[in-house]
Amino acid sequence: MHCFATWNEPSARVNAIMGVRPGCSWIAPRSIVCFCVDVELGSSAGRYDALALLGPTASGKTDLALALAEQGPVDIVNMDSAQVYRGMDIGTAKPELAVRQRIPHHLFDVVDPAEAYSAGRFVEEAQAVIRAIRRAGRIPLLVGGTWLYYRALRDGLAPLPPAVPGVRDKLAERAAHLGWPSLHAELVRIDPAAGQRIHPHDAQRIQRALEVWEVTGIPLSVHWTRARHQGLALRTLVLIPDHRDWLHRRIAQRLEAMFAAGFVEEVAGLRARSDLRPDLPALRAVGYRQVWTCLDGRLPP
Image 1 (cartoon, rainbow, N blue to C red):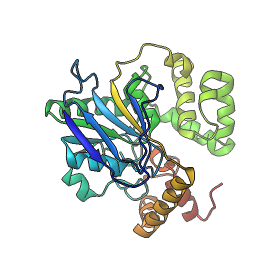
Image 2 (image 1 turned 135 degrees about the vertical axis):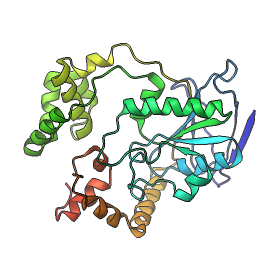
Image 3 (image 1 turned 30 degrees about the vertical axis):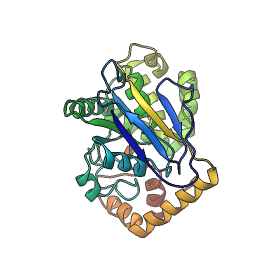
Image 4 (image 1 turned 60 degrees about the vertical axis):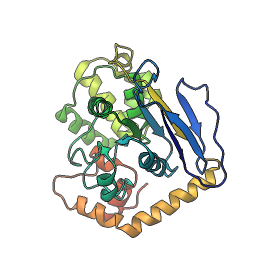
């Protein structure tokens, strides 16, 4: 059994285990965090395959993960959909390279921004990484705020057809003329259940839902009800701010630090590449699409 006592900041408050899901603890930032983790997470005694650390942007996930890794046999596994992309470091708040070289990190810088990276691919690669970490006798700690990735890993994924570039390109062209809310209205008519779950401005998910419909003739929500791949048992910790204004100040400070570190120059370098477009999934990440739009001479909506 490994015990970790970390994050000795003031305003200590550790929330009790909530009844949202078994194996899920809610922890307030700026707290003294003390908990024990069985190295044999997947054994009958341990019950869990991995740890997962979730929370909103700037809530302190990376700081806590690094503190845990400094005190125990912990490998950090990325669970952020933007940090998988190479060359997108500042705007994604990716841990510095020196830190990633000192402490084992996995699933960072996996693909080029010109490539698509799906939840299905994440699940496949994360499961392989977790198995390798466990075989080495270490503890896998998933860290990130991409709920889709977490849910897919925990609950499993329904089998879906692979992406079809031609179909995606046609949908992107229609969206350029009509706008994504218009395509979302079309999705609501075709698949009310999916339309209700997907936000009218969530371009990536709208595109995927319509793509699945066009390729298979079956609504995405029907695919969701079908047999899923086996999920993992995750011991989940969720960071919840004591006060929203505290989190808002943290976000503002992070944004200022990003601009000071060269975020605009990072986006300009991506924009200079002839193979990248602002409608690619990587460049729809928050911050990147807004800076790209400004560099185009247009203000974001």
